[in-house]
Each structure stands twice: as C-alpha cells, then as structure tokens.
Amino acid sequence: MLWSISPFGEAKVGIPYAILKGVNIYLAFICSFLANLLVFPIMNFFLDVVNRYFFKWYYYKKAAIFVGRRAKAGAGKNVKKYGFWGLMVFVAMPIPGTGVYAGTIAGYLFGLERKKAFFANAIGIFISCVIVWVATLTAMQGFNN
Image (cartoon, rainbow, N blue to C red; front, top):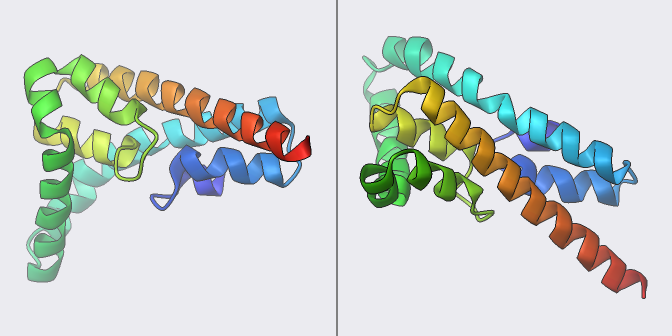
C-alpha cells in the first residue's frame, strides 16, 4: 500500500511488489487501487491548504511551478480538449508521470470540477491497475513455465 500511495511508483509499482511478495492477487489489486485512490483527497488538501501557505517562499514556488508545468505539459492537450475523458485517459496510462498525482494537479490547474476530476482519476486509476495487474500476472505465469 505504501508503494501505491507514494509518488515514486503508485499502483504501477505497488501491485507487482505485493504480488511478488506473496500477497493474494486480489488483495494486492484492491489494496493498491484503494491506496492510489487516497492520493486524490490528499493532493487536493495539499493544493488547497499547504500549497497556498508555502507558495510565498521562493524555492518552494520555483519547485511548484516546475511540477505544475510538467503536469500541464503531460496532460494539457488532452485535458484542455477533452476535459473529463482526457484526464481519465491520461491517468489510465500506466507509464511514469501519468498517475493520480499528475492527474490531480492537471485537474486543479485546468479548473475541472472536483467531483468530475475525482471520477476521471478514479476510473483512470482502475484502468491502470487492471493493466498492471494483468501484465504482472501474465509475466509471472510466463516465468513459472
């Protein structure tokens, strides 16, 4: 669960790690998905409260602008053009930099309604988890044969 909630791997790392450590495959999926889903409210609190407080400090502001630009650049075209669906597809891609952290920031920066942004992130996380879960199980089955 810690890998799934961390920005260094999210469920893309949490699911394979749990399965390789012998956790039940269904429990690994559910726990990783739920932990990754928890990132959305945590990030929104951070963006609403903590970010506004620290934004007055130069180094924090510089780092926050860098992260915001990366999230906007990665998801920008899709979210700007397709809104909910663009954000969902962006979060669903199980590649580095496209998870719920970047999705939450992109939804925030583009002014998506919070409820829509949550559902776009949730569906995207679920699709990403399914892809990673199936790929992990398929790879493990291949190694066992």
